[in-house]
Length: 234
Image 1 (tube, helix red, strand yellow):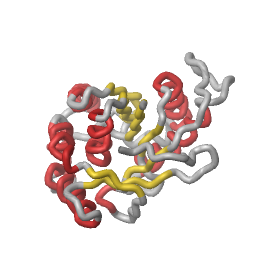
Image 2 (cartoon, one colour):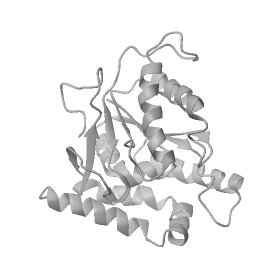
Image 3 (cartoon, one colour):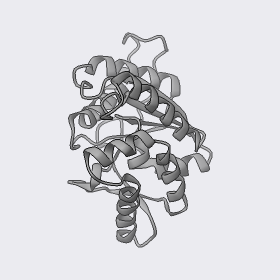
Image 4 (cartoon, rainbow, N blue to C red):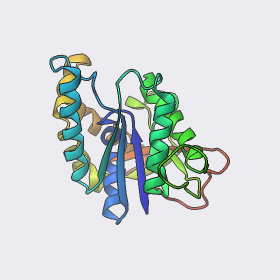
């Protein structure tokens, strides 16, 4: 299967669904990892241009751990809402090119607007990708796809309904995130926590609830055209 995962910032996918993407890759899926924003606001020392270059390199290396393609759509941090229509067009182009069997992205009630608006952009892009006269260099995609929403950051106001056992992939998830060195530095300064420890902690919490080791949770988008008749998540 073709798996398309769309996060807002360059490390969001590793944090929220890296284990699931690793598991998809292990079962033979083609995985494409997309970030809408370039990470340009995520550092205290580097300039916007410098940190965007650094984070592109780090995210590409992270995706390579599982053999995934990485795409950055280049919107500026904190201005994804301003560039909404451009975001829909760019994600639509990716959908038309990748032809995913299912999509993973943020939920719509996240802690920051960049994340929440990404959810809406992806949903709108699934429609735009099917419309022949929507502007694109690619032919329209002839189907809608199921969308799975990742858990909210730190599991706040998050009630997943589908679960993926990532016990065999937790070390790969950590390895993927370890390439995001600049972001790990920024989070220690800005938020005063260790993201590697946090990743393990929350995956273990869901694992305890599911009576296994480590787990990632998801919620299915329940809208016309997007309801699947089979399980796509591993």
